[in-house]
Length: 308
Image (cartoon, rainbow, N blue to C red; front, side):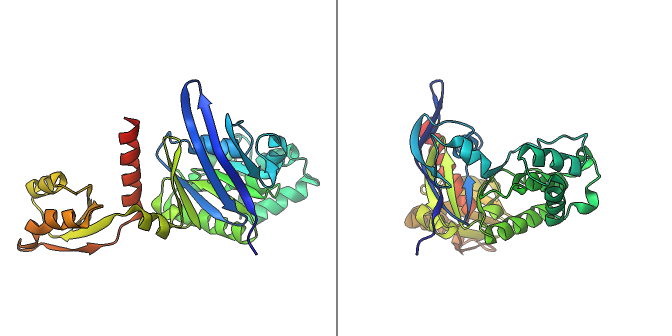
């Protein structure tokens, strides 16, 4: 039995004046799934999210969100969605509890005190409930924002770069919470720039200049890129690195600690470019594993070339 789709939109397009920001995007997200939405700044991620949650009306396209028509039932969609924006958007001169009380009243939750207490407890905020929001660290502000987004028990959670500026420990705790929520049936669409976060998603989609370039599991996207990676161990001279960067078939050269990752799509050309290094004393060349970052740099480079 197939899992129903929480998001099922096709041909989503949005223009601002003569500029097409989102161009014919298809997106399908199953109920209870965590899907990562990746792409460079200005790629159309936020605009797509806002069309999905009913804040923007698409200029073209159709589909459903939580079984509701994305074009004609946006008001009903908003009631069942939690949307966490990039910027902290709560009152900094109110306490955590006061902010959540305000949100509970907006959603007409009844009784308000019970809804707030349950939310505070669920996200470990009870001990800080009387602290002013403006005095919170980035990680605690993030937790407050998430609490406000889920206190009305939405069916779909949209997160727009939620962990920007948050330390690694808080990021990990945040993602543990997201997986717990998804395990309870909540569907999550999250935009991110962090490769380790993308790898924690069930599936990912990559968008650039408004076009969806790839979707699938991390393994599927990496395999579908057709990239080949070699790792060079040893101290290379600057002139050797420049020669490698200029060699035919070499698309990326990136240092990783004491090693150099050399990436391209043509294995034969890469082997030829690396051949002179194999005879060098103290240098070892061996096959490597293509990373998600390698794939996204390739996507970004190609998208920039097309745009130019």
